[in-house]
Each structure stands twice: as C-alpha cells, then as structure tokens.
Image (cartoon, rainbow, N blue to C red; front, side, top):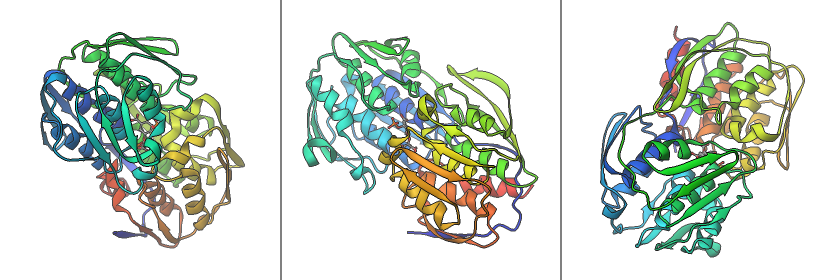
Length: 430
Ligand code: SPQ
C-alpha cells in the first residue's frame, strides 16, 4: 500500500481543467456495446480501474475490446456471440460492474462465477439477486447470494414489474438489463429517481425502452446496434475541485465539458444552497447527455440541511460536501443518506472518522451526519481505507491545514480519477 505526504505551500487553485470521463457512463458504454451487434466507439472513456474491470469481464466472454488511452473500440456479434468465460470474473472494487453484470449474466445460457476485492466482497448483492431470482435466475453465493463470490447459472428469464426498496441506479439498471434479455415487458418503478444513464444509453443503442414518470418500461428481445458514445466529464470527479475552489482563499476554477444530467447535478444545487459562487456556462448536448463548463470562486459558504429526493443526486459527492460543511457558517445536517453505508466503505463512518481526525466537529447519525462549520482543520495521519472518494476528500482537506497530512492507501484514487494529483498540481501552479 502506498502513501503520500500532502503539504502544499501554495493553496490557491486557479485555471481551467477538464476532468476524466464519467464512470457510470463509461461502464455502460462498454456493457451495451458488448451486447450490441457491430462497432461501438467510445471516446473520453474513463480508464479508471473500475471501468477496466468491466472491459476485462466482457473480453472474458469473447468480445473484442481494444483501448488506446481514452478511446475504446468494441466489436461484438451481439448477445448471441457471447461465450461462457473459462475463469471466474474478477470485478475488482466495482459495485457498478457487479450489479449491472449480474442482470446481464442472469439472462445468458452459461455458468458464471463472480468475485471482487475485500471491499466489494462486503457490499450487498441481495438487492439485485432478489429481483433476478424473481425473474427465474439461479444465483447462489456466500450468505445465500448476499455476498460475493457469487455463482450464476443463467437462462431464460421472465419479465417482472419491480418496485425497488433501495434507491439505487445499479439495481434499477440490473433489472432493466435482465429485462432486455426476456420475452415481454419489464417495468421498474422507483420512489425517488436515480441516475438514468442506462435508460438514455439503451435507447441510443436501439432498445425498446420508455420512461413514463417514475416508471421505466423495457420490452425484451430487441437486438441492440453498436453506436458511438462520447463520454462527458464526470461531475462526481469535478465535485472535488468545485469544493476545493470554494473553500480556499483567492481560488477561481473552471471545469470544462462536465456532464450535467439532471439526475447527477445535485452538487450544483447544494453549492447554490450554501451560497457558493458558481456559474454554469456553455450548456450543450453530446451523445444525448447535457454538458457545460462550471466555474467556482472562493466563497463564504453557509450551512444548510440536505435531505430527501436530492440524496440520490449527490450520493457520491457527500464526502466532499461534508468537508465543505466544516468551512460553512453554522451547522449542516445531512439526512436520508443511509445508502452511504453500502459504498466502498461505510461512508458515514469513514467520513466522520477521517474529518474528526483532522479537527472537524462531526457526528454520524443512522442516515447521515451533523457537521459544525467554521472549523480550523489541522494535519494528521489519515487512511482512505481503500475508498477513492475518501482519498480525494483527504487531499482537498489538506489544502486547509497548516501542518502536513499523511494519506495512507492513496492508490485507490485511480479507481475513478487516475490523474487527480496531476490536475490538482496544475490548478495549484497557475
Ligand atoms: O460502482 P461503485 O463501486 O458502486 O461506485 C460508486 C462511487 O462512489 O463511485 C458508489 F460507491 O458509485 C455508484 C453510485 O453510488 C455508481 C452508480 C452507477 O453507475 O449506477 C450508482 C450509484 O450506486 P447505487 O448503489 O446508488 O446505485
């Protein structure tokens, strides 16, 4: 495990950067390209470790996938060209690969074994195994299929009408992908809308999928056709620099070509709610997804209450929002975010532990956190616990400390943002 000493002399961030491609969209582009007949060219692909696990999984099923830097070419004969893998499939650290892939594999006439790293092996898979079993899938694994390693004997499935009891785009997507491989109409009805990249992109690949309010309907057994996908910059990665600029004196940062899908832009709403100076410009659309440039200037943030339907729209940004709240005037409350407990770490526990170590006054609750503002943070020895978003939160926190911050296990940042430190250094050196 590697470690970094974070001690920046210059702490003002200025300039323009682009962040790497969106992780959720990159995964889906490889998966749907592999299910589609013909060629799919993916540009601005995120070559982070999680998305590389998705590529390897489909290569193991015989799909030709070639990558040169951030461009990926998928050539597939479609669903009928997929083969049974010779070996168990390693999902690494990636929850998205696990849950979406389970939906696909359940409908293929083969046997699969899936496993992941220590973190992924603790994350719940029953949320997707249950509806897939209802559709007729044969799934077994540790704790009756709640935990990886998991074995799937795929085959002919039946469509279902499904109302998930967790707010999860991965569960919705896994069921829709299983639905794609059945005869008939599968419906997923969410209480709170989660990210909708699966719905948008399946349509672009030619699936018969319709969104009617909170309901998504997919009619199965429709062949997909390869297409070109340009991946927007990942707003979840941009969030680290948006917050860094807001809380460091004199900063002024623009992040270009960031994805602005409304199911993902809760961070912009939160920054506005907290009185951060933020502008979104040059709004346009690429490959069916809205994008734009976001500028943030150093601000005097104010505390807020974050709860309800916004939570799925900021779920991956909550660690960095918690850091922002330590610098706000007043007490910030985050509620309804129990899903944080099922991420790469229990992100309520890991955020509270880490920020407390750096001097924050923060308390974890069952479903969120209570964070006191106006806090002077100090240096210390920290650990990402293998969670990329905790690692990046620590790096941004170190911009607020007079003393050095030791970050242990920093290499996990490559899971979603391999060039994070290069981009940070470039903004600090202007
Ligand atoms: O893929 P993974 O490991 O689950 O990654 C995370 C992340 O922080 O990058 C969550 F830990 O993002 C998820 C996100 O939280 C990616 C995702 C997707 O692409 O569909 C959806 C969200 O998860 P969920 O469980 O709410 O559906």
